[in-house]
Length: 45
View 1 (cartoon, rainbow, N blue to C red):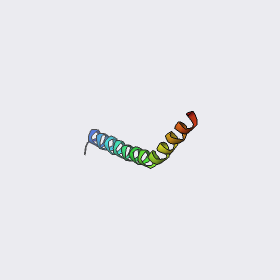
View 2: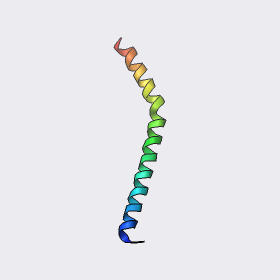
View 3: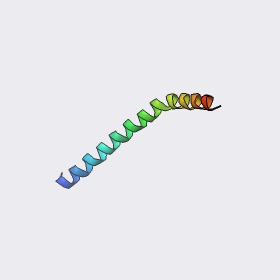
View 4: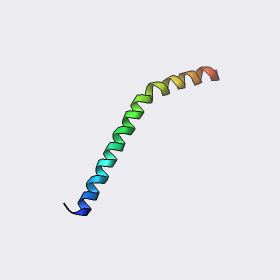
């Protein structure tokens, strides 16, 4: 493989891994976020 193709493949793999990590973090924190929103609504009223 040429150096340019290796760079493109590496960039694509890094982007995919980052996207998967971000998706996992967002999914994992969704319940906590909803709980915080409910608590915030109770405090404001």
